[in-house]
Length: 327
Image (cartoon, rainbow, N blue to C red; front, side):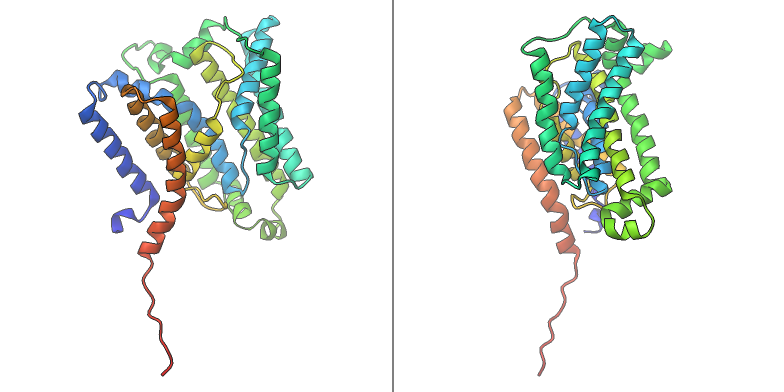
């Protein structure tokens, strides 16, 4: 069991198995263009999973993060219809995401409400607002620049068409590095771990627990807005069902990445590996024409396995203790 000392090694092994197995069984799976396309399956979800990971490490959760994406996209679409320029459209999306996250954080920190209850409520609120405003309509006609960000490659930006790495993937990697440095290499990251492990002791240690939690909820809203901008550019429209169900995918990525659901433990490396694993697996199933409902079932099963397997491995590694009975 020495090869399974860290959960990240298990994830790397699983990724290698996925690529090897599907690469041998699906023609064209290993082509550069197919590998580039596969990143679209997880880049946007990884962005919201990064924010979700910080919240879960701190002992909180945001189940409204996908609904926040729909509302941020709606704000961007309404700004466009009002004649706003692209920078103002982006500001509208980011401001909406920050306000949504701020409302979640305010309810949790000011009124001491459980975040899972609060964000279930705001999930319905945010998604409902998008559905009421849009109905069965969609907002289209976004600027070509936005479409380039959602569908283009980094080579398009630097004038090297042969460099086919998607812009979305580059944005995801940049944010992963920044979030990873924050969590693992700064005093603020250590405080986030401390808050998740023991919030009461953290307060007595002088850490402003509520301020950190509020900031993490606002950051989650901003990351949702960033993901919404990229997703809207990629599909070319704003719809009320934008990112429907992605909150389950984000939670699955976080837990599969080794972040403890009770808080206080986890790594950004594990979260990114889990996003790659889940995204590449779904991409391969899509190439095999597997239906969406089957993919949803697999995501649910992976969530259960991700919670059970680390505990099972921990039990297997634990040395058995002999029970000594008095003579």
